[in-house]
Structures are given as C-alpha cells and as structure tokens.
Image (tube, rainbow, N blue to C red; front, side, top):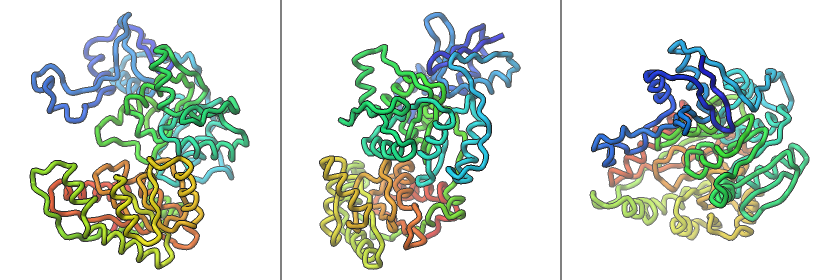
Length: 457
C-alpha cells in the first residue's frame, strides 16, 4: 500500500509506482507553459512544453505541493490504488458553521464548502471584490484558534490587513517588510513577499512555521518569488483569497499547488441581486479609429491608440466632468504615469497619484478621495489593496487585455454607495489596429464571463 506523507508544504509518495500511474499523476500535476510551442526546445522535440510540479527526490520518492493532494488522490482512486495519507502537521476536524451575526449567509456557505470539500479545510475562496474576503479569513483564523501569517505583495495590502486585524481582533499584528517592520501580537503576522524572498536569498534553508497561511490576492502566487516564499512556509492550514483565481498565462495550477483547490465561488450577479454589491451599468464608448501602421510594435500601438489618442482623452475628460456635475465620485484608471498626468490636466479638479508618488503623499491623496474631499482621482493604483467606498463612476482608460487587472479594478466601484444605487463603468471600443480591437474583444469576453446578464451595453 502506498503512503503519502506530508512534510512541510509537500507530500512525499512512498511505495512503488508503475509507469502508467506516474504518467497519470504527472497529467494532474502539470500545465503547459505559455507560448511553449514557440520555443526551440519544443520545436526540436526535446520538451513537451509542460511545467511539472510532481518531482523526484534524491532517494527516488516522488513528491508534490500540498495543494495538489486532492488531484493526486483522485488520480489514484481512478486506478483503484490503495493508499494512506499521513500528515505530521495533524488534521483537525472542523464542525460546520451555523448562523452567526459576524458573517453574511454567502460567507458562511463559502467557509462550509471549504470545510466539507477540501483536504484539511485548505483551499481558495473566490469572492468578488467587496464581498469580505478578509472577514472570512479572520473569522476562519479565530475559529481554528491558530497563529496565522498573511502574505501580501503590496504595501497597501499590508496596511489594509493591519487595520482590519486591529479592528477585528483588537491587537496590533507583527509586520514584516516595506519599512513597516514591527513586532506585535504573535498570533497575527503580515509579511511582504519581497522581504521574505530577500531572506531566502541570504539563507537558502530559511523557512517559517505557522498554524495558518493566508495568501492574499493569490492569483499572483505563480510568480517565481511569490510561489517560492509561499512554499517555504509550513502551515497546518492554507487559505487563498482572490476575486480572480485565474491566469492569462495558464499557470493557475501553481495557485492551487500553494493554497489548495477552489473551495467556493461567489458570483457578482448573486451579490448584486442580494443587495451586497452595487449594480454595474456598463457603457462601451465608440471612438474614431486611430491610424497606426499594421506592423507597429505594441508599445507604439499603445502610445498612439491609448496614451496620446486625443479623441479618446477628450472623450474621457468630457465623460468624467459630466458625471462629476451629477454629484458622482469618479475614478479614472490608467496604466502609465504619462497618461494619468495628461488626463489629470484635462479634467477639472482631478488629482493624480501613482506608485511612484511619495508614500505620505499617496496615503494623503487616497484618504482625501475616500472621504470625498477629492471628487475625481486618476491613478494606476486601484487594482489590488485599496479599499474605497463611494466610487460611483469608474472610467477604465487603460485599455489592455488582462482579465485579472480589469475585474480587480472594476470591483473597486461595486461597493454599495449610500447615494447612488448603481455604479457606472465606462470602457472604450478602441479601433484602428488589430491588437487594440482584439483587446477590446478580450475585455468584453471578461465582462460577460464575470458579470453575466449584468453586462449590457
């Protein structure tokens, strides 16, 4: 009989594995690298294009990341292989959560799905922006009564979690990274990926132990440093949080490898229907086509079709000022600083802030926007980690095709506003070059997939 033994963030398979079983396990623990077919190794027949997460140790045992245990168990069961899982970290039986005033009904349901459907109650909660992912995680940590570490990749997320933990638990958490280092309550730690990665470079044997690991915005987990750090943390329980646990590069498997499989998905449509999120009202604005050479690089196309497209920028300014005159608070999202500064100069009363702004200035501007003192903010920032109520009009001026960036940004505008019962979302039907037009279709597909019947224009 096979034994599958957990050691840290991995499981090791002890026992003989026939070749066809190894191939079956490889198929459920591998994924194709983006653009693999273009590589010389693939074209020479030296590589099949896959990234394999099932590997072999020096003693010959196969091992795989913690989060893929359900994939492996399913594959073994299909072949009728008898096995036993042994977890040195222990498996705690968690009772189903009943009614509680601390959680909304869909949050209770999501956590109960985590309890009932995932190995050791570890996995990913896919909840829309504004649905209370951090509340779910903190309630879960309190229920398990374990010390926990929150992994973040942006300083805004670190500060947001710090404030949330202080409000919820009444303690100051320990902070690691971004110049915010502080020793606080040992039960709660928030750590920057970049800082922990630097520690690994200094000490190849570095690791951490904790009762529970929370991976915030876990769709970024497949990034090399993020994945390496997350797998160096030995946690009895692992929880991934994201509104969009997907990847355009096909590397979703590494999200699940680090956190566990998707335990629960909550749709925007359901939350809008139940009154937890504002209803988005989409407008796709027509634009005259730009003149860009067919063979132009993407940098040239983006500069001509988005950043310096004056027809487009004038339209953005007119739309922004129109909604500002109706009393709405407007956020204009851009990708490039030059674009943001250009639009700020064209919109009366607009203020620009970006990641390159000084920390104190950035915090001040965002806080003034939160309070409504600033009515129009132009920024590159509102994707992840900035929680702002009251945005009743969002202008997606950045273009592009990234589904994650799009949905993360739009989600910031869907928090229920006390004045307006909806959220205006403006995007643009860019024309004049095939790449611009393809990106428009990608964004429309993302809107349809994520918002269903709510996306009408």
